[in-house]
Image 1 (cartoon, rainbow, N blue to C red):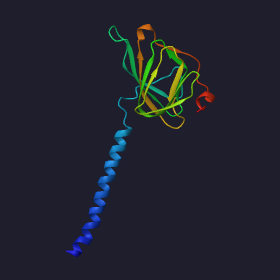
Image 2: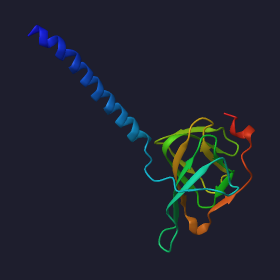
Image 3: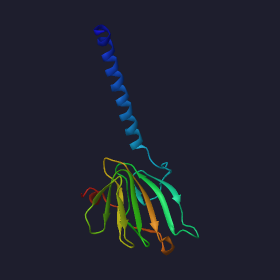
Image 4: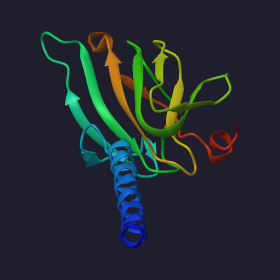
Length: 160
């Protein structure tokens, strides 16, 4: 019996370790998966860096709301802008930055909800080293959508 135990014990340890590592890899993969596809790359001048947009719902005759999943690669951000009807951001992945004019930059991360008041200039995007994805909800779009302003300077962006 002792002879067989010496051969079986290392096999059991290796098997247990392999199963445990597979479970950890599976959990990590699930945490990094996005809820929605990235969508299309944004190619206008209202953003700095590489940003992707997937429109999930657009304003229609019943719903006065725009909803989009926005993915910012590291270092990417919006220009300063405001929304006549306000905006809500639901961070779904990564870590980013949010700032209202005249206030300090806030670090936002997965699970955070930001309520951007109507007519308040602000910007948001990824940190310099990490990507960030959020669901952007433009509320009360019947009174107007985003009003785009000047780009966020590198000095403003790095002023954490």
